[in-house]
Amino acid sequence: MKRDQTRPSEPTRRSSASGRGSAPVIGDVLLVGVALLFAVIATITVLNLTGLLVEDAPVANIEFEYESDVKSTYADSFNTTNEAGQYDGLLTITHTHGRTIPAKELFVDNVSSLAGKTSWAVTVATGDGPSYTRTQRVGASDQLEVWVRTTDPVQIIWLFEQDREGLVLAEWEH
Image (cartoon, rainbow, N blue to C red):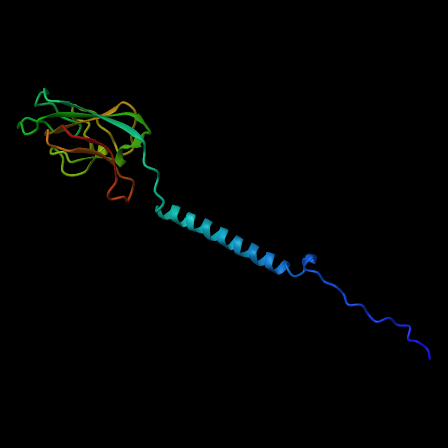
């Protein structure tokens, strides 16, 4: 009897180390990572375009100087005088140092001679005090003068675009 000279086939070993089984998993992980990256970039772009990402608040040092002995005919930065004697004195507000801020973003609030929050940008050039336009920036040594009562809790507020509340940069109480 002749023996069959063919050898039985040996089982082929496939180990997970060969990488054939892990390739689809790595591809899926990379696909998810790329999709997340695009989602983050798209979100940031949309928020920037719609203005929902707000600029950091400016760091500025604001100082106040109150003077009660001022001629009543002196016109402050808003062209207001004290001829009727209803105000106690003149408050000089000075941006001493820090970041320059657009005048249209700086507001004075809680001042009896003004009607509500009033922008530095609406000051009047015809007054005796300093004045600013919407396009000017307020920087170191820039001043604003306003007639006040000693009971006025004056605030300097930074309002950025659509922000309604704003951020109080400085407060004065006599």
